[in-house]
Structures are given as structure tokens and as C-alpha cells.
Length: 197
Length: 274
Image (cartoon, rainbow over all chains, first blue to last red; front, side, top):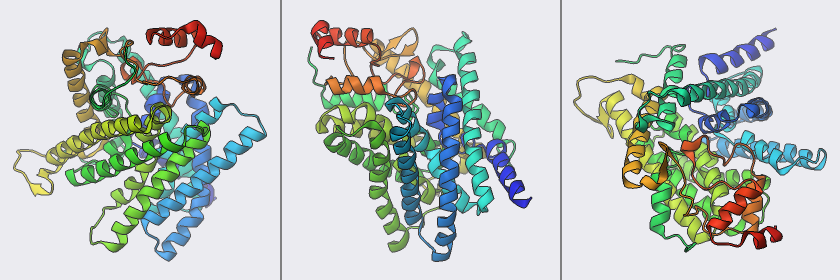
């Protein structure tokens, strides 16, 4: 029971309380890019969750050893990177050889695997001292956090495009920055943070 | 029309007009999450600059023939090979006390979207020299934003610059959060857009930033580059919206023909080759 509770609480925390994309900026560039294509949200989010969960699970074992051996952050980062590259290689080669995946699909797979969000998950699990179940939960939450952020950005970009009262200099990207800033502020409201002080 | 671009052309386009952070929205993670002071911003920009140049030059020199889906993990591995030894040396052999966020975010530079985007959009389609020019220009553009944002956030959020106290009437801790960074980026992007619309009005069309059709962003168009663009996935190199176009997009046969015609190349003949 504790395992399931850990898993879902961490996933919930990763999505809603400390949304990794909007509160930490992880994978924000990819969220902006994907937000322009709503049809790809689900596919990329599933891929991100998949890579995050598998990488988190494998790196959880590394984290236990890393703490005991007092490994430096540089060594840990190198190991996480090798694990992520290996997971991607296995998935991509399997997709290519077994399922005859197209270059386009593999390109999308690469974008889902190699972004700051997926690569940061093992670091976050390590620094937050998540249990194994918690690590899996944060991996699952990363994908959901991404799809939530991309959907919010997509809706915002539509509203901004329809708004004719925005001054010329602020049309497009500048307005998007302000919009995402406000969403980020809204998520910051879930944490115990002072704006002034 | 000459297909050769000078360093000045590449610099103006890469660092200013299509600034990687403010226009292409690449590399947002380090600037939003970790550029909270001049010191951290300077460290991140130095690492990002060196890594971008090294990976782009290596990609241009050795990875042109490698399939795109194999290149992606190679960028990460090359980045880690460059960054991790330096970070390890700083951590274990020097007295520099890195914060936890720096220890986490410096390795994340290895997987930064600026690197992947510019390697895929430019480096693997051009000569090593041009790839170096582009990487240097983009690196300077990104670093300038990192440092400017870092200084402003430190000043407004902590009332210090480079750790030295500055007397300002009120501090606003929100500036140290991603919210504060995004607000600064919003104003900076608007400022840049105003500057471009005055200085380079040919890049502004109906109020949005666009690539000049008569001046290709990729000076060398090869069969390989056209095929690579056709195979490009739905998310990596396509612009987010009209405002974020960093180059001329090549997609359908008609677009390719139109693009080649603008270069003065016989489209019928080229079409046969394809």
C-alpha cells in the first residue's frame, strides 16, 4: 500500500504542486515547440513518461550506490547520461528493426528522450531522496506535467493570436512569455513561496 | 546572388535577429531555472558557449553521414564527455563551492535544445567553418541573454550584483522564481522585436518576424539537406509559430522548388535529381 501511495503522491506532486515544466523550466523549450501541434501532445507525453520511468528505475539503483560511494555530481551525471542513451538506443533499435519505424517516428522519439526534463528526473529523484516507487511516480508525473504545460501554452497561444489589442512589439513571443509567466506564478502559489521580501 | 555568408551575416542572424532564447525559445531551461545571479549566469553561459561550439564543429566535421536518430544520443554523449570532466575537476580538485543547482544544471547543458537545434538545422548541413561561425554567434546571443537576465534577477531579487550589496528601495523575491525570469524575457523579446523592426524591417512581415526569402539561412543546399528536412520530425526544427522562424523551412516539393528557384537554380533539373 505504501508503495502505491508513494508512487501516486510523488506523481501528483510532480504534476500539480511542483510542475517540473512550469515551476522549474525543465523541458520548457520542447513544451513551447510541441504546443504548436496539439496532435502530438499525447504521443510525446507517453514517450517522455516511458523514458523517464525506465531511466528513473535504472538510475534509482545508481543513486543508492552513488550515496554510499559518495560519487561526485559529475560522475552521477555521466552515468545518468549513459543510462538514458542506452535506453534510447534499445528502444530506437527495437523500433527500427522489429517495427520498421520511420525516420520521422525515430526523430520524435529522440526529442522525447533527449530533453532537460527526462535527463533531470534522476537528479531530482536523487536530491529529493525519493524511494524507488517515488522515482517511478516522478517519472510518470513528468509526462503528465509536460502534457499539461503544452496544453496550457497551446490554449494561451490561441488566445494571444486572437487578441488584437496587444501592441505590435509584444505580439507573438513576448506575449507568450508573459502568459507562461502568469501560469508559472499560479503554480508557484501551491508552494510556500514569498513574492516579496 | 552569392550563396556565401560572411561571419557578420551569420552573427547578426544567429545572435540578434533570431536570438536562440528570445526568438527561437531554445535553451530556456538554464536561463529560467538557474540564471538567478551574475555568477551562476556567467558559469552557465561559459559552459553553454564552449559546448555549443565544440558539438557543432564535431557534428559538422564527422556526423553529416550519420542518420539523425543516431546523431541525437551522440550530441548528449559528446556534451557529457566535454562537461563532466570539467565539473568533476571543479568539484574535487578546486576550492570553488558550487551550489546544488549548479551541480545539477551544468550537466543539463549537455542536452540543451540550443545545441540540438543548431546542430540539426545548421551544423550538419554546412562546412565546419560556417558551423563554427553559427555556433559562436548563437553562443554569444544566448550568453548575452543569460548574463543580462542573471544580473537583473540578482539585482531585483536579492539587491546585489555579483554578490556585492546594492542599495535599492525594495527587493522582489519573485524575480528569483521562473515567473520573474519569464517576465524579464517577455520585455527583452519585445525590445529585440522593436529593434529588429526598426533596424532590419525586411525581417518583419505583418508584425511578425520572418526569414528573408531572398537570403537563405542555409548557404549550401545539397540533396542530403533537402532529404534531411523532409525527414525532419514534427517538433524539433519547425518553428513554434510565425514569430519564431529561424530559417526557411523546406517541406513539400512545391516549397523546395520555390526555394531553389529563389536561389536561381533550375527547379526542373533539380527535381529530376531528387
